[in-house]
Image (cartoon, rainbow, N blue to C red):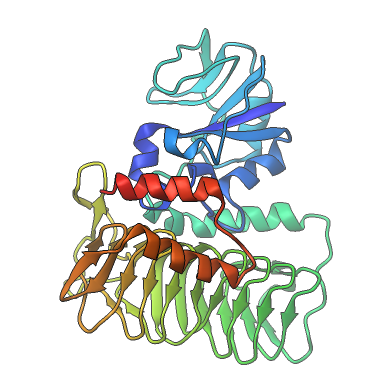
Length: 387
């Protein structure tokens, strides 16, 4: 089965800055990315139909018979089963949008299906960056149940204290957990392969610690929180999603936040997730180039890939940071930082593209990764067309 996860222009732009560097389906919510959720429920060959500049790195692979699925749609067994029964030219749709379509070609917003059926259940989707931490608890529990079904956890060290249901703790082979307190009363705790929870950490689920992720000594975690592959965190976390390969290794608070890949938050970085007035939070909205009401009272930073914050950085509530930024200095920087900027409360200047590449190469080398030629062309496009 050839399956293509398609981005709509509207949803892709609404999810910036996280989708500057990836298709929607590569966003992580719960334990898995959106693509990985679909792969587990609907086996097949997967590719992406995304915006033009991302297509070199994430090409669509078409056949004479394709299933197209909206990339912001969160997978469920019911929807996967219904999609699997689609006939050529048929779509699953509601009055507002097409969720899935089967056919040779499909252009979001243009293709008219020969027939439509209503979804088997009300679809849930990621439409704005803050939906990622908002829906993380539900998705983490669903992923945990699917991943661990019929499997046996590695044993928990007798140096640890477990509070709650032991069936809601799963430790993959190669993971290390010593002298930690784990509480599953509010949700599951998943510890991925070769991940580590160091001594004196205190964790309240739901938590997903993905492959090779690390909680440093004394870390306090309130769920629902996800640390993607190769992330390292310390201090205090509350309802945070790290997509992967990013660090907040030292003390400082981070809550209700989404952090992209290859980011680093320096020691004692602190981020507000609640206004002093307790008022509704407004979040920078790239399509309208303005701040948009979110309907939320709690929202911390949203940070694009390859952005950094120096020691003792302070973020105001709902600060949005683009791609390739370097933030440092005393005081609060503004709550919207354009891509490829460096500075802080006193103002920002533009980072040169060569300087960005130099930093990115050094950062990625620490994880034995390299920028590909396709990556360089992608970031060059973003630089030349920066917001």
